[in-house]
Image (cartoon, rainbow, N blue to C red; front, side, top):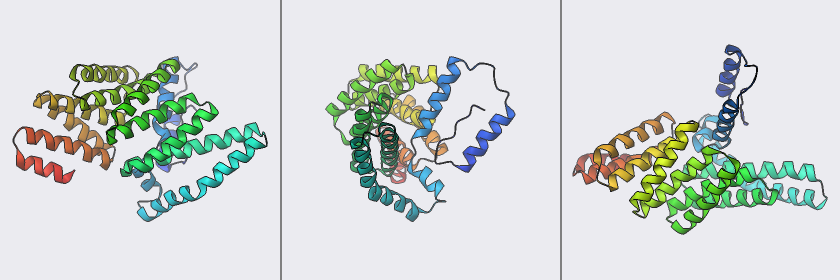
Length: 289
C-alpha cells in the first residue's frame, strides 16, 4: 500500500485511496520518478483552501468561521507550550510542537488567501516562515516564501516579490524540487508582466510551463499559469491567444470549485472584451467576477 492521505481525513479521498490500492498491483521497486510523483502529490495536498474547509463542515459557513476563530484563540497557548519545551530542553517534543504550529499557520494562511484577506494571510505566512527558519525546515521555507510572494504580488509590492522569489528559487534548486521552482517561475513571470517587461515575462512563463510539463501539472497552479499567459498576450495585443488561455483558466477554476480563482480569471476575460470593444460582454464578465 503506497498511497497517501493527509490529515484531516476526508472520507471521499480515503475511499479513493483504498480503492486505488486494492485495484493495483504493487511494483517490486519504486522508481525515482514514482517517488518524485508521490512527493509532488503530498506537496499539493498539504495546503487547503476555504472550499476544503467548507467541505469538512458540510457547507456550514458559521462553523468554518468558528474554526478560524478557534485557531486565533488557541495558537498563543501552542506557542507558549513550544517555548516551555525549548526551555526544558525537550528536543523531540519541541520539534513535534514546532511542526504542528508551522503547519497550522500555513494551513490557516491558505484559508485567508482563499477569502481574499491579504493582511491576515501575510500575518499567518510570516509566522509560519519564522518558525520554519528557527527549526531549520528548508522545504517549508520554500513553500511559505512562494505563498508570501503571491500575497505581495496581489498587494503590488514588487521589490518584496523579487527578493522573496530570488530566495525561493535558490531553495528549490538546492533541494532539486522542480515543482517549487515552477511555482516561483510563474510568480516571477507575473512580476515582469506587471512591470511590462515582456521578454522577461515570456521567458519566465516558458520556464514555468516547461518545469510543470516535465514534472507533472497541478491543476491549481495551471489555473494561475494559464491566466498569466492570457495577461501576457492581452498586453502584447494577441487577443486570440489571450482568449484561449483565459478560457482554459476559467474552465479549470470551475473544475476545482475555486470561486476566488474563477473571479480573478473572469476579470481578465472582461478586460480582454474591453480591449476588443465588446462592452456588453465585458460588463457581464466583470459583474460575474
